[in-house]
Image (cartoon, rainbow, N blue to C red; front, side):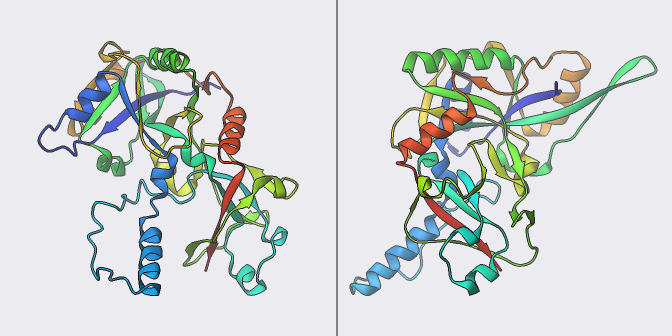
Length: 316
């Protein structure tokens, strides 16, 4: 089924001394790709562990710590990024009182998914209709996307962007797949998740996915996210390099100024309207593209992480 959409890349300018640095890097084809581990943003958890260790061993620990440089925005931080499957609590040996407090099924977050490098775009959906013999368009961009950057790159020829990525991936002997993210509603025992105040807990240690292969309720890939992020309309590139690294990576694909153009965020609405009315952008991509399937990439990352996963539970 064909869909009408435009790919947009929102880019920040964190380097105040050179506000367009990240923009220039992207236009030069130097694609900066964080790992999914980055979006887990477990700084609070790591800090708590360090504090407990210090107290247990009589080591001085600061009372106040500046968190501003460590905590991601609400739109970026996602503990459930990288969930590989869900389990019913009945399949686990767990305290009955804890089970009764569950608001969703248990989520298993694959260790290997943390090594996945990703590049994220906004998929601007639009509909075309005729009125008095003229084409008109309906589209909407979430205002929350304004927090993702001062500059926006409009991908004029997405099929050529994919081609450039594919050539670079082939040169490095990597695997990749790109396409739209699917947003999933959490469930509990096959029904809608319970509403109300909640908190997410991560259990100590890891389990082996193979031990629960017969108890999995549903499989997930690197293209599945929680429905509370659906406003992001994400289209992403997932890169498998076969390395156990959670560090960001730059994929060099060469200058892309001939297949895109950029604007400032305050000019976005007018620019999209102009592009559509003048037929500048005609979408030619639908579905998923790459040299591996979603399931193949899923298995590769699980094997890279030795089939280990962490248990996440939502209670309330």
